[in-house]
Length: 474
Ligand SMILES: Cc1cc2nc3c(=O)[nH]c(=O)nc-3n(C[C@H](O)[C@H](O)[C@H](O)COP(=O)(O)OP(=O)(O)OC[C@H]3O[C@@H](n4cnc5c(N)ncnc54)[C@H](O)[C@@H]3O)c2cc1C
Image (cartoon, rainbow, N blue to C red; front, side, top):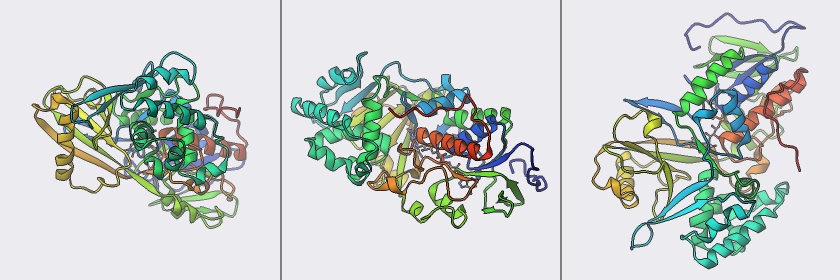
């Protein structure tokens, strides 16, 4: 328990009283499920093993800096995460760009740095990106034309076709005339950051979902948003405030050790020192933990959860003694550096500048010692950002998330279970469940909504009118 004292075990809810639910896991999926259930009048207990809420998207203190474990961005098309921000009253703290604009700096050529931009015009799809693509200097004219043709072919793919999940995106791109350069300078530039894998390691189904939704649905779909405050301000402090005012009993440092069905149809949830009896359980923990906690018979093939791989993300944090970069962020080519964000204001740094490098699909780097990472990345930053050349580095550190996301490999789709299990009253949530989205904050929130929807139906409670509504299929 957060305060060290555990109340005595509570009896199961008597007949006719408010129904109860326990949500296990205080990441975005669990927070969402807890809020949705509480908003419907269910008595909710949220149990989180760590000392804070927010799961994989959190902050910690390092001297005067408040550091995010990893830079997180979302897109305008992330409608569920945007609903979540609204629900916790955090929208103003994580604004969206008015219009997609990504500076892309290429340092591959010996003659020096070259800046390109991926941005949109106020035109209908696909014309909104036409001018930017036509002027994109990191691809030849022929490559730009081929990209346009591949985008149209992508648009024609049917996301409901399960065969898409059996193929890899890299082969599909090659079959559609994409050069290695086009993959590096465009498809992987976006895909690695959103899917956490290079095209060759990615399910065509997931990649098509990302590119169709982000770039080929609504003109503003790919406008980028990110927290201008530490992630913990949103996913821990504001989320906690929303949970408290919805009446959720939230317990951190409460690691669940078992979930078992009771003879009366309810569920028993054990944390050290307490057993909670409840009508419904939402298991919103990562797939391995879910596998370990699932009671026998809850899924037909529970071992499939162990087949869902994971992929790492590394963040490299560099604090300079002076301002070295004028832009809020940029993407890089021709260097191991992927995306660079200015975290100065968000972290509370009062002088100098704090840059965070977000390195996805970081299998090669994730276990390197800090000194090796420093030797690798500092000279690259000097190539990319001239202002760093005379600057003093006041702090250099890294954050490693070895299981940042599930690996979006071909075939992963059939391993991801939905919210319902075979055990009545037991539901699954988590970015890794079958939301159709890659492992993102959007997927986590969607999964929490789906689990709450399923639980509410079984508990006979009305869906709260302010809950995120899934789009009707076209
Ligand atoms: C470095 C990094 C960068 C990322 N970048 C982006 C990005 O730019 N955009 C984006 O959309 N997404 C990004 N993601 C992914 C995003 O953070 C996750 O998809 C999302 O936060 C997952 O939420 P979740 O609730 O499904 O799972 P989690 O966040 O994993 O939450 C599960 C929770 O369950 C708890 N738990 C586990 N076992 C137990 C137990 N037995 N009892 C109680 N509690 C338990 C855990 O402590 C954890 O808090 C990034 C992730 C990382 C790590």
